[in-house]
Length: 256
Image (cartoon, rainbow, N blue to C red):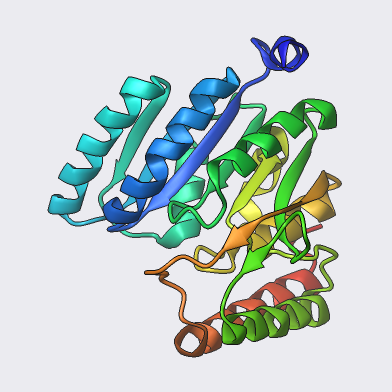
C-alpha cells in the first residue's frame, strides 16, 4: 500500500464522480460504505457527488448526506446542477471542472458495484500509467458473482451483441457502472461526445479507443439493486436510436 501512495501522490490525482438524480435514499445506503473504503485506502481521491437537477427537497437531503460522509472522508463535495442533463451529462459536467486530474472516474450511487471493488480498481490505476484507464466488467464467475434476474441477463446479452455489431467496440461490457479514464484522453475527445443518456459509456469508450487510449477491463462482483432507473422494455428504443447515432458518427469519421 505504501508503494501505491508514493506513486499516486502528489503528482497524480484521481476524481471519482457519483451521479445522482433524486437518489438520496440509495446514496444514503452506499455512500457511507464508499466513504469508509476511501478513507481506509489513503489514496488521493477527490470524490464528487454530482446532482443532476434533483428536486429542492432531494438537494437538501443530499447536502445533509455529504456532511455525514465528510466526517469519515473529508475529500468529498457536492456539485448541484440546476437542470437535468441525464447521467452522462452530470458526469461530464463534473469532469469538466477537473482539468488537471490524472484520472477521471465514476461509480453509480446504487451500490451495485461495491465500495471495495471500486477502491481495488483505483489501486490498479498506478500500474497502468496516466494515459490508460480501467473499466468494470460484469462476468459471472466464482470470484466475481453477478446477481440479476433472468430477463435482465437476457437484455444485457442482447444489448452487448448489438453494441458489438453496430459499433464494433471491443469491450466485453460497456455499461457497468464504474469506470476510470485518463484525464488527458477525456479532454482530448470531450468535444466529440454527444450522448448523455444511458449509453453515453459506449460513445466514451469508442472515442477513447479511437484516440489511442489503453483501457483495461477488470471483472468485478455485481448485483442488481432495487429502484433502478433503467427499464429494458421502456428504454430499449431510445438506446437503440442512440446506438444508430453513434454508428453514423463513426462512419462519418467523427471519432477519428
